[in-house]
Image (spheres, one colour):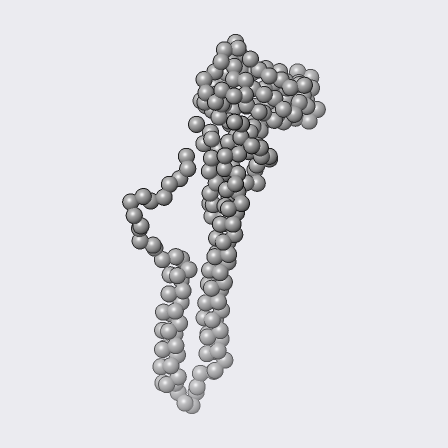
Length: 228
C-alpha cells in the first residue's frame, strides 16, 4: 500500500590568476636542503680541525648522515602519497560527476517544487504504529499523518494538515515510531533529492543537493533519473 497525502555550484576566480604559495612539502624540502648543506660544511670544518690524536668516531658521522637521508626520504614519500591521493580524487570526481542532475537517496531534507516527494521511512524495531511528521525550512510542523508500519515508500503531495497546498520550498520528514501507544523514537526519513554539485574536499567526495545540504558519496543509498 502506498500512502499519498492531500532551490550553487562554486565558480573559480574570474578576475585572473593569483600567485601560488609554496606547498608544505616544498618548504620542508627547502629547509632540509639548506640544513643538510650547513651540516656538511660543519662536518668538513670539524674533520679539518679535529685532534689527530683523538679523532671523532667515523660511526657518529655515518649515523648523522643516515638520519638526514632518512628524513629527506620520508618527506619525498609523503609528497608522493599526496600526489597519488590527488590523482585518485580527480578520478573520483570524473566518476561521480555523472551523478550531477540525478536524484540521490539521502537522509536529509528535500526541495519540494510542486511534484510529490518520494520518501523511504525507517521504523524502530517492534513498532506497531508510525506517524510521518512534515516540517518546513524553519522547523515548524506543517503536517502529520499515520503511515503503515513497514511501508517502504510514501509519496508526499505537498499539503498541510487541513489539506491546503503548501508553497515550494525545503521540507523535512521525520518518522515517529510507537509501541503500544508509547513513543519509541523519531528518525529522519530518507528522500530522493537532486544532486547539483560534486567536489573533492581533501580526498573526500562531497555531493551538494538542491536543498543546499551536503553528504559524502558513501551516504547515498540509491540513485535514479531526475523527474522530467
